[in-house]
Amino acid sequence: MSTKIKDLCYIVPMEKNAEATKSRILKAATDEFASYGFAGARVDRIAAAAGCNKQLIYAYFGGKQELFDALARDHILAVLDAVPIDANNLPEYAARLFDYNRSHPQLIRLVQWYTLEGVESPAATALTQQSMLGKVEAIQAAQKSGLIRSALPAEELLTLVLSISNAWEIGMHNFQDGMNTEACERHRRSIIMAVQKLIS
Amino acid sequence: MSTKIKDLCYIVPMEKNAEATKSRILKAATDEFASYGFAGARVDRIAAAAGCNKQLIYAYFGGKQELFDALARDHILAVLDAVPIDANNLPEYAARLFDYNRSHPQLIRLVQWYTLEGVESPAATALTQQSMLGKVEAIQAAQKSGLIRSALPAEELLTLVLSISNAWEIGMHNFQDGMNTEACERHRRSIIMAVQKLIS
Image (cartoon, rainbow over all chains, first blue to last red; front, side, top):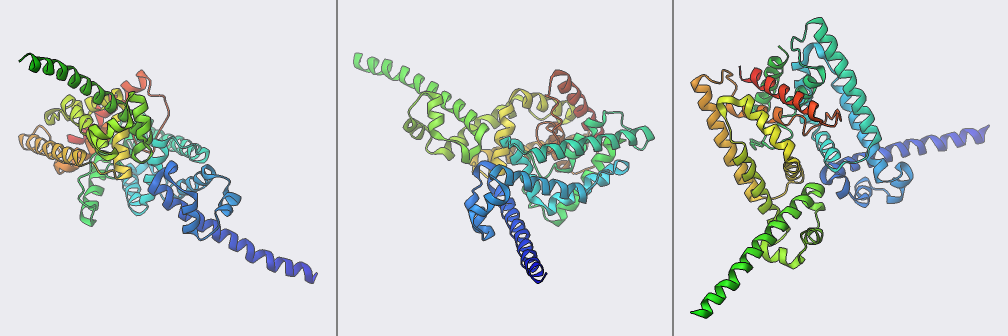
C-alpha cells in the first residue's frame, strides 16, 4: 500500500511536468511556424526555445507535421471558443474577430502559411470545415427570421464577412499606418459599417 | 565599315537572345517563387527550368533578392495596367480585379509570400504605395462628385473594396467548391453587390 502511494506521488509530478513541457513546446512551435512557415520551421530551434531535447518533441508529438497539426487544432479551438458566431449580430461578430486577430497575430500568419504552403493538417481542415458549416446554418436561420435581410447565399455572406473582418490583416493593401490605437478603432468602425450595409 | 556592320549583325541577335533568356528566367522565377516563397525558392531550380546557367541569372539580375524585385515589378505593373482604378464604378473595378486574379493566380501568391516573409522588394513597395495613393485620390474625387455616397475615409473604402475583391482568393474560409465556372460567376455577383452596398 505504501509503495502504491509512493508510486502515485512519483507519477503525478512527472505527468504535470510532461504537460508543462508539451505546453512549452507548443508555444515555441507556434512562434517558429508563425515566423518561418511549415517548410522553414526547424524542430531543433523549437527544442532550443522550449528548453528540451529534440527527441522529446518526436516522442510527444510524432513528426513536424503532427506538431503543426496539434498546434493548429489548439489555435482554431481557441478562436472558435473566444469568438463564436453571432448571426443575429454579424457586424459585432466581425468586429470581435478583428479584435481577436489583433491580440493573436500568430493565428492569421499560421492560417496564411497553412493555405499558401498547402500544409496537410487534418485537424485544421476538419475543424475549419465543421465550423464553417455551423456558421452557414446560423446565417441561414437569421435570414429566415428576417434579422439578416440580404438574400445572398449564406456561404457568400460568410466569406465576405470574414474577409471584411481581416481586411487590414492580410492582403495586398498595406498602408503601413502602424495599426496604432487610433487606426485600429477607425478600422473597427469601418468593419462594423461595412458588414451592416452588406447584410441590409 | 564592313566590320562595323558585321559587329552590328553579331550584336543584334545576341541582344535578342539575351532578352529571350531574361524573359525565360523571369517566367521560371515566377513559378518558383509563387510555389515555394522567397526563402524556399532555389536559384538552381530556376536555372534548370529556364534552361540556362545559374551564373547567368546572377549576371543578369544580381542575386535572388534582385530577381524577386524584378519580377514583382513586372507583375505589379501588369495588373496596374490591366485593371486601372475606376472610382466612378468601384463594383465593376472590384469584379475586374477578381477576374484578373482568377486568370493570374500567381500574383496573389507572390503578394502573400512577400508580405508573410517580409521580403525586401523596393520595387514592390514603391509601386504599391504609389498606386494606393493614386487610388485614394480617385476615390476622394468620386466622393466629392457624389458618385460615391459613403462618407468612410477613402483609404478605408479602398482597403475594404480590395479585400472584398479577393475574398475568395485568400483567407481562412475555403469552401473548396473548386472555384468552377458557376462558383466564380456567383462570387463575382456577390463582389459587385457587396461593393455596391458599401459605397452607397
